[in-house]
Length: 441
Ligand code: AMP
Ligand code: GLY
Image 1 (cartoon, rainbow, N blue to C red):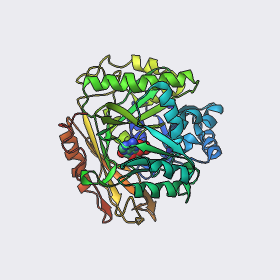
Image 2 (cartoon, rainbow, N blue to C red; image 1 turned 90 degrees about the vertical axis):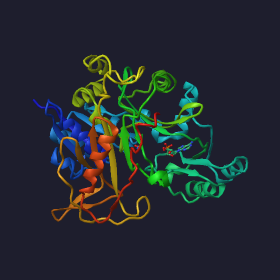
Image 3 (cartoon, rainbow, N blue to C red; image 1 turned 180 degrees about the vertical axis):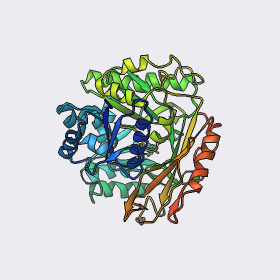
Image 4 (cartoon, helix red, strand yellow; image 1 turned 135 degrees about the vertical axis):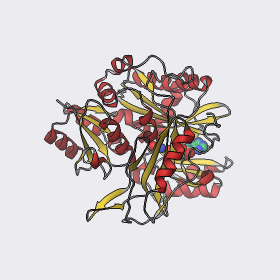
């Protein structure tokens, strides 16, 4: 009988997860909660709010679903994985203890300090006075972060102390992020290229998906404010020293520390890393697949994604990994991918965003997307059906994904496809993955 699996969430990442499951030769029966018009072509969308834990469980029971993948951080932090597991459902995604790595940045810093993982220096505050007194002792630039999860808007990289003070007041005085900003970190600002590392783990064994890079700023040349991500590419060229450092200084110590603290973790652990002159340092841990990184990492995956999800959720990741080819042909020495990545392929995603994003933007603009082909396809993110017609419904509306034998080919595919999207209300960056082959990590 076909395995029934539910993907929880409704963004671009979840469309990419559904796509990868649908490519499984095992032909699973796929549900998405709530999904989007993209997942609707491959899965059965269920009108369920991921933050309503009982409603998600009831939907699983109603449809006989016993395997779930949780995409977004908020339901993970709220304990959805525990809720489903307690009811006998296998879940890809950590319980609330593991999700705290993303939901509480001060906790993540404390775990990193104990495990000896390199990360920027910081101080934590819960009053404006104490934070401002500290600000008097530092030089800009400085980074101010809400400790809780704030939909990617809680972090401000401040070029001036005036900006830093404004973000401190927004968090602690104006409660701009609610409880998520009731405590803040004031952090040393680092410089260097960023790297997204997605570790699949069942709490015992682990393997890394392809290294990827997100483009967080809204404008070409990394100008303007941070966004949820305007595009991404994979693989990022890596040398063996960096592979070794990521594994031995970051991933292995973190997983060992989780074991030491009895924190179970079955899912993806995402390390957001900055490559500084003093080596790689962790800016954040997330407890889930990255968005838009997932859109480019999964197409490069070797092995059956459904079987990977199933094995991780059941705590049998080693069995899955032993069935893969021993090495990753063409990959760098020392990369702890265990055969999960095809290094002879590359993928690029370019996001089409609503004009005005990440500030105020309109919704409900008509949209027509081209059909997929083998090397280029559209991933839906902020789209919806209105009176039988596809319209925009979010800031990041869609992603055009291109795949090819190298980054230049993948990039050309992605941009050619995006040019064929018909919508008068979208903009995109023109420099996603530009020159990426030459900028090694
Ligand atoms: P975070 O959610 O903590 O990863 O922060 C979001 C983004 O802010 C990161 O991807 C970086 O681009 C930037 N950022 C965060 N922390 C720092 C830091 N200490 N120095 C420089 N940039 C940072
Ligand atoms: N791409 C950044 C994130 O998923 O948090």
